[in-house]
Image (cartoon, rainbow, N blue to C red; front, side, top):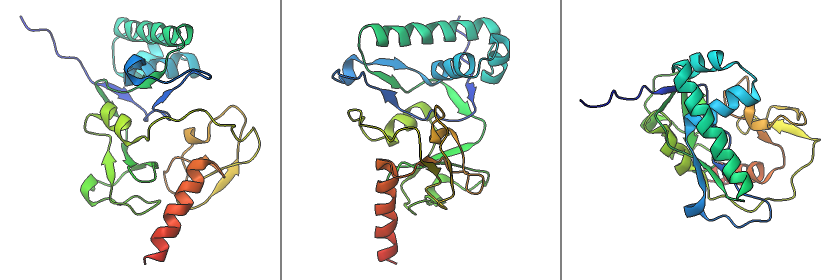
Length: 214
């Protein structure tokens, strides 16, 4: 008798990072701990949003016992990465998203659309690139593909400054402890980024190149 197929877990949005590297340590991808997408979501729901396991299981679209197993596995993986000074990758898993999310392979912008357009006919709203991929097909692998290789940690931008929409340049004050990328621009449905960050400067360069060729 064949095992019952796994139900796809339901996620509100893609993670904001493809992984983490230990400060002062070397990142070796083959040795990294792999946290799949539903395990990441369990950490977000229980430890970041402080939901009960029953509430979280309903959002993830799994039974309470299944959620407990996913959550327990996720915490053990994170603990191993911390204790053994290993990198952590977020990828894979049988998941679907509540909305239609897309990622740009050129400027790394993440956005969602309510239109039923196919990914082949969608241009990035930030840099106008046609190198856009939908998260609907194998979303865990899509997420890992579009991200650039992880780099060593930089000096950071501190707690002041603004979050900015890479599409329309709408700015809002940055709130300490809340990543800009957890916020969506209310006008564009594009994830916001930190103003003057390397990502922001890279997008400005790409947009400038596009405008020169028009």
